[in-house]
Length: 222
Ligand code: HEM
Image (tube, rainbow, N blue to C red; front, side):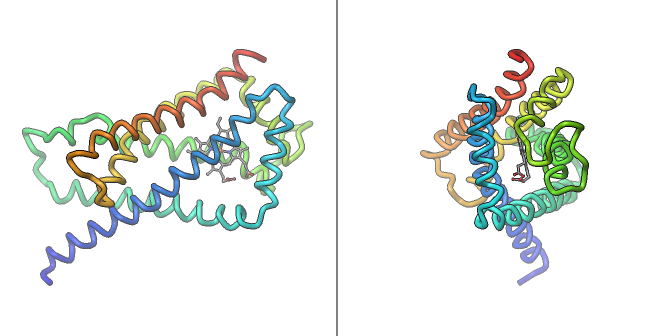
């Protein structure tokens, strides 16, 4: 096998790792959103806290948390690799760009991904690092009381705004992510591609819209 064959193979391998890790993250987002939407129940956080407690003690979920962090690390690392490789393999930029290059969602995957990564850092500081004891909780709030922590955070319109805009960007990232993962994993077919595109858009709208409803609710109706 020639070195260009090796390069092509490792390029495909990088994309497959990224797509598989990304697919796992897509499932994580559904579970995370389903639990977070319990914040919208008008029950003083009872249902949300019960679900969070269950997730906190369930050993399967604890193991999945490690898989989740590995999934994020792989997806981000290989995202950089694929993106840098794409640039290098094209030292002179095309004058006539192909549709997929100019299509805004695919063109800005690296940018939207970086914004989601920044959001994630902020988000871990807000909840996860407090839970595991790296950061002290704010006065009057118990370490595992995610409900009152969320209420406090989203009572600040600026903070809600940061989360809201991050979810919008996440929506753009997800819209292309699902299509791209399907293509990398060989699920594209002239007949199914429009269906996969529609499913990607629907998934992105439901996930981003669902997350956006949370800061919106606490900012508007508190
Ligand atoms: C309003 C929206 C959101 C709320 C209220 C929220 C709330 C929380 C809470 C309470 C935790 C701690 C749970 C625990 O450790 O037991 C957590 C953890 C986490 N969240 Fe979010 N989250 C939101 C959106 C997101 C989004 C959009 C992402 C991904 C892009 C995300 C990724 C994570 C990750 C990776 C963790 C740490 C792993 C885990 O504990 O499961 N979250 N979030």
